[in-house]
Length: 339
Image (tube, rainbow, N blue to C red; front, top):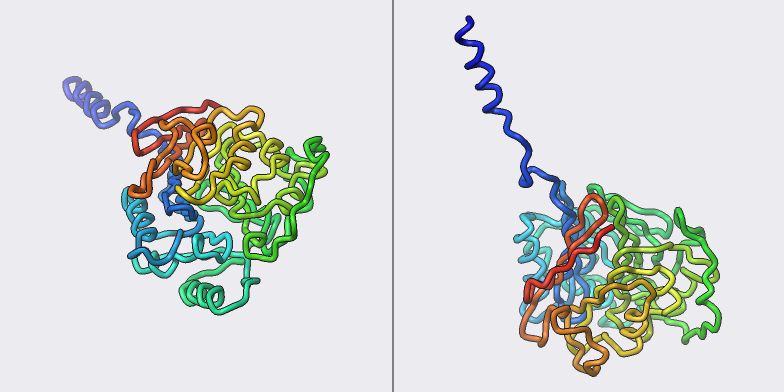
């Protein structure tokens, strides 16, 4: 017995190796996919669950659906667990039929019926509904939310309605509201956008779809109902009918990503509104904005696509402590932002 005891102890030690970095919890992975001025943002949770926000354009030989499917494959996904469609414009919902041919989609979230009439909007909406109605469907309501793994999704706007009570820790008066000048009321699907605050432990990201100026105002004026955030996906691709400075500056993002196209969004007015936000460390762009000058584009290292022939992503890896790393996949330029 005395001879076997040391051997037994050795065997126990051998099968119980120390923890290594490979065993650490994976980060939340966010893929801001280039759909040439539309939106497609893929969230992959450490649990393997997934959330996709919008699907880019239809047509173009399935270009946008292919790019989303390729990003999903690189992330090890075989399906999309939840798809949020912010609104029913072609650059956001148009890719649904083609994507559904490449990946099954388990749950659809949207704002309900479309508000736009006519042959083209009706055909676009009906093509989406034909796919949606084969799966689980949830209508987003301001103030409500859902969870995907450890990701909390809180709806701030939907179907033209907005939250009316501040989120936890928010509600402070917003002095930036003074001098606000409204724009003409927006009767389109843009003002119906599902807007979201996405929270992963200590990390907070804002995505308002294509919500427009007057609706943005009511989310932060006279009081800031949202609070502060870490990452801002610019509203409406950086177009100047959105991106109200009173909102952008009030939510105080540390980092912003502009999901513009080469010839869409990235307007000097919206770009300046983001770039001058107090506390902003960096602005990243999906595309170089060809309609702007060099002074209204960020340095090349922070731009994923310098022309319209590539489809490079901007990715974000979010750690459990709330720190995150942004990477430009064109040049592997990365930067980490501590909590």
